[in-house]
Image 1 (tube, rainbow, N blue to C red):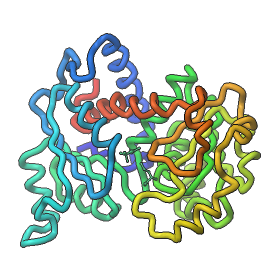
Image 2: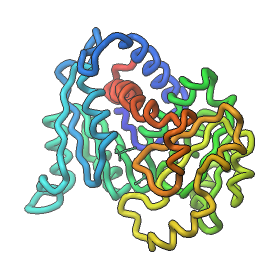
Image 3: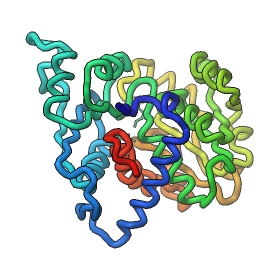
Length: 309
Ligand code: CP
Ligand code: NVA
């Protein structure tokens, strides 16, 4: 069974297959409306159960559209509406029930351990829709967006992340190993990526360049990425953290250190880490980035349900 939990655990050839499939499917839908089905309806009769323990706009809507376009249906649940872990129903019981009714399970959670536990008890694939340690569906879709805009394999581009060392960055780091691209990361001292992430990179014989000076990190970049300084349910002193990241705000001056045709990406929601000018500038591709979630998640669903051609 093919789960989609962390990019680092998925073979690079499978990730590339997903991207190629998304490209083909997107092209075929050029003249279709949002709710028109793909002609082959490969997931006809299939149900994706989605569960959110944290807020979501894009992931929720893009998975809804993804399964619909493939001919299937989705049911979206809030964790507090289930018996999960209460009232005589263990996680294993819930997993059994989900596997009885559904064909795939997408979970957004505050606990990596919960995803791992579910994966042990489910007999249907699980997709990680954001956890404290990663956001794999977002980042695979971002690789797709970059190659779509730059019309080049990502391995030929310089990618730069300026911001917090969070779940999205962890997945971007995993992607940099899987797709062999150059990644510069810039963040304040003491906010660098965790040791276990860097050790994994080393073990895979790759290198991430860390800069405490964002201008140096942005130099020659083809893509500048950022994300919220304070993530959902981040248990930190928010005022202090935002202050610590003040010099890492992406404004037009900082963008000018990147290549002339560099693009700006941000998974949203956003905070003070990017200026309004950069966010709404034509270099910013955030809306295309959000839309592509639908296309890439369709191919992730096909991969998990063993229907990828
Ligand atoms: N980028 C992203 O995952 O957005 P949501 O939190 O709205 O799903
Ligand atoms: N790092 C952010 C991503 C939101 C999509 C968070 O975890 O809140």
